[in-house]
Structure formats: structure tokens, C-alpha cells
Length: 210
Image 1 (cartoon, rainbow, N blue to C red):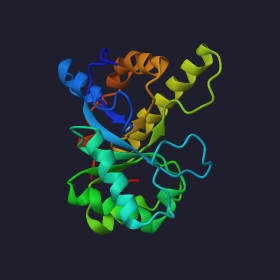
Image 2 (tube, one colour):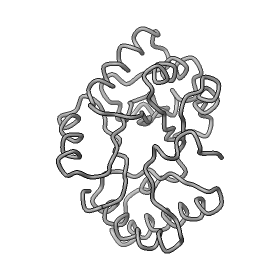
Image 3 (spheres, helix red, strand yellow):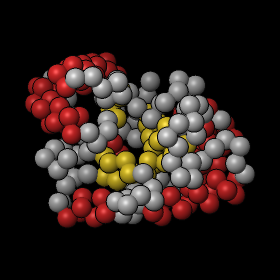
Image 4 (cartoon, one colour):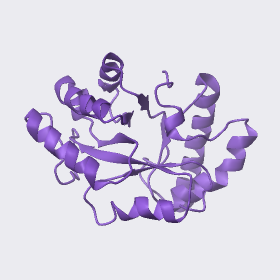
């Protein structure tokens, strides 16, 4: 990861073994990376739920208790993104509670867009919350053999370039897989040859439009 000498944003899950160590390592390696909380929200599949995943049928006080605890578990965050959440991000009541709390804390929200029916953008606009949304997933295809998977990630990066040229900016989300990180690093010269500047996510928050 630290071989990528560009301003990445790391989304860290709460309450895990290395949730606090990762921000410390970023400081130690003096990298121009930002940290955001990767907030576990209820998905439609219900699979692979993290501990204390926020669900749409929870009481407001319970939602706020989990959210505040999660925020405190990852030091130095400047924003929040959703981990999974295809069900929760379609729910106006639950997302209003979450996004209003982020507004109070001056944290932006990155919608991972795990559902096309997400209500997060509309709510963020109404309450004046700094907001952005994912354009491309780099590595969500089912992993096959390495050569095909590498080609898939490269294809997604090409899609990212095309969106950035059309819309003026684009945001990609990838996972901390060795292959994904390698392809990102390899692709940086290609991206920059297209006169595209790689900037921190925080520079696009509040400016990103469909």
C-alpha cells in the first residue's frame, strides 16, 4: 500500500484488531493518505455482517450509540463511507439519523452506492452535508485466475478515466487486495498521461455531481 505515492483515502472498519494501528502507520510512513470510517450497514443479503451492523429496524438511540462508538474506534477520521448497506441506504429514517450526526461532527459521507436506490444524496443535500458517491468499483468481480482478474481491474480503471473525462471527476473504490494495489500503482502513469490529476477524496466532496 505504501508504495502508492499518491493521495489515497483509506476506509477502515471499526473495532477490529488493526483499526487504530492503521492510522498510526499512515502517520509513521508520512503518506499523504486520509482516513475515513467504513461504517457497517445492513445489506439485503444479510451475509458477512460485522459486529454491531446498523440495521433499519433499530431505535434511534441504538443507531447513535453504535455510530458514535464506531467513530471513536478509528482515530483521525475526516469522513465516513458505508460498508455494504444495500438495505440501510435505501431507508430514509435510518440514514437521516446517521447523516445528521455526521453533519454535527463535521464529517463528510461517501456513498459506496451498493444500491441504485440509495437515498443518501437527497438527504445530504437537504441537510447541507458534505457528500460524494462512488463512480466505479475496481475489484468486485468474482475472482478468477490472476491474469483475467488483473485485466478486469485495468478495465475498471479505464472506465474511471472515461467518467472523469466526461464529468470532470470520478471516485473509485477498491479493496486491500495485493493484486488491486499492484494494478493501481501500475496504472498511475496511464491515468496521468490522460491529463487526469489524482487528488484526495476530500477535494471532491461536495463537488461531485451525477
